[in-house]
Image (cartoon, rainbow, N blue to C red; front, side, top):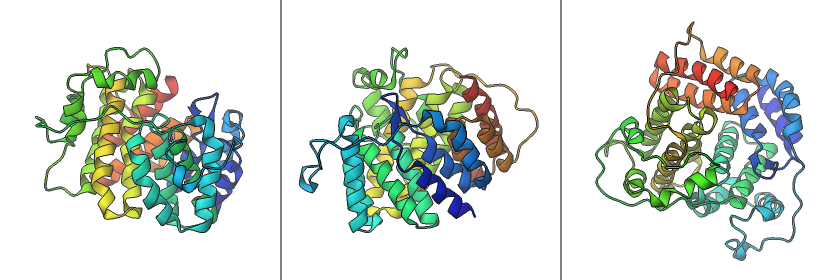
Length: 344
């Protein structure tokens, strides 16, 4: 039933656009995948009903994008409809793994696309396909890739050099903050190039040299979940992406050629560091007590009941972290995050 419910949801969303109000992301495909993955398929259509007024129609294309001329329209949101049509054609004629493997290295340098929602949407779609490959899920992958391509946005280039922290949590603490955190993400990310410590902080990926790529990525996600508990008070919604962006990359790894794993790790850390630089306050603060300890299933039920897609996606990442670590504090962080996000 869960498999068919997700396919129904994707079909229901097939003719919706990747954004609304000119910039805000359509979170519905990501949220419903998380709900179904955690066994809350019965809540999907009710949740979509509540989200319906935030959906816009799929944009129309202007002109086809030739396969050999993909660079020019990259990062042009006016061509969103063209990108959607382009990936419809590619996935209709080729295996999805081939399409993903070809486009992943093209899109990875622009990982900031749509406030990292491009890669996040792709990560949710890949997890769904790896669970059960169906036509609606492959089509959703195409829509995620199209969104990423249309909003493709590179970060200020990181450097390479000595970095005094090896564990991800310490690395997050050492990320410099942009000086002006009043405006939107594009204005904040534009300030990264002027930060003296950005090249070092973003360029050296934290973790033990002996760890493999999946383990290092998982440690970054776990640290970002913990960071939300201490720094999410300032901007709980946007700081979610410091965890969900690298988690999306982690989910895509099994479907990618091994040669792409190391650059994926680098880009995932740069994205998590960029979100931290843009939205995390300088001072840590605990969010307070949680109350009764909650089971992961109950946490996802509460996130769904909140109606907030960011709460659902952060709880999804937190449950992943709890599964890896078995740390009850992670579930407490997730419970606090629901209250913070919905109050924001």
